[in-house]
Length: 125
Image (cartoon, rainbow, N blue to C red; front, side):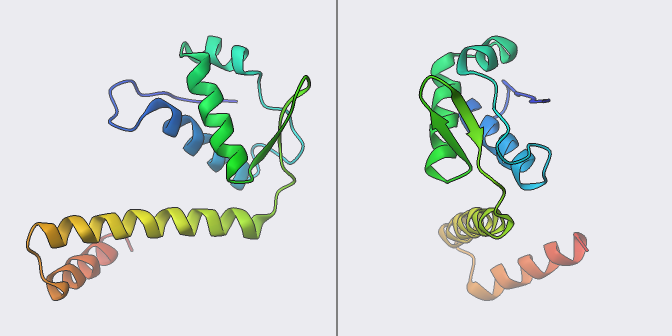
């Protein structure tokens, strides 16, 4: 498993870990019922606090991506692709909503925001 932590990023380390593990689960790199490394092992490998890894694992469990069995470890839930895709859509929607709020607080009109979104979509096509 390859996890890359960017200590210079504005994204908190636990979120970086959650996002990368979610991606691995969704794209099948981490198949259902596979055990994740122990909290201690992951924290040692990544040279981060075990509390950070625990927080990431807890968030993944809250979102239904993993299940923790005390004394045995944390395991990837059998892949429900539809659930995983919905979680990704929800995240994208939340981020897009935050961007719209930021644009509105900068004084942009709805039409200006739509035009900007259209331009971004064209650039990414």
